[in-house]
Image 1 (tube, one colour):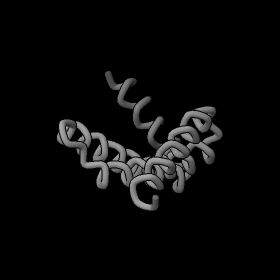
Image 2 (tube, rainbow, N blue to C red):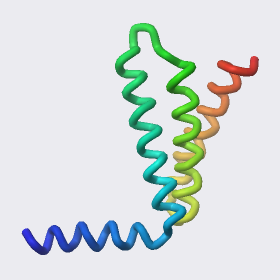
Image 3 (cartoon, rainbow, N blue to C red):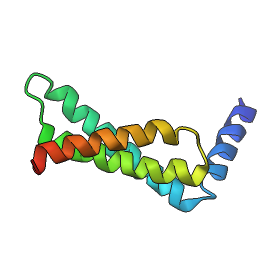
Image 4 (cartoon, helix red, strand yellow):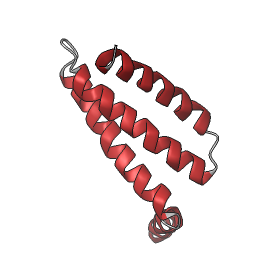
Length: 94
């Protein structure tokens, strides 16, 4: 059990070495979880003006963190950012 705790501690300590990526991931998680909760609680009448900007900001922060970490997840995150940008444009600009 102690070894598991040490491994978890090591994981987060290593993750914190790149502070920009760490804080981007932290903010990204908060934004995306909040957006997901808003969507889930308003599913019958979706609050798009709330969750679309949250998703867009979260996906932009995900781009930063995946780029900084050199993760191949950047392909998926890029797709999310493009789609969330398009949704934002349709909702607020067009």
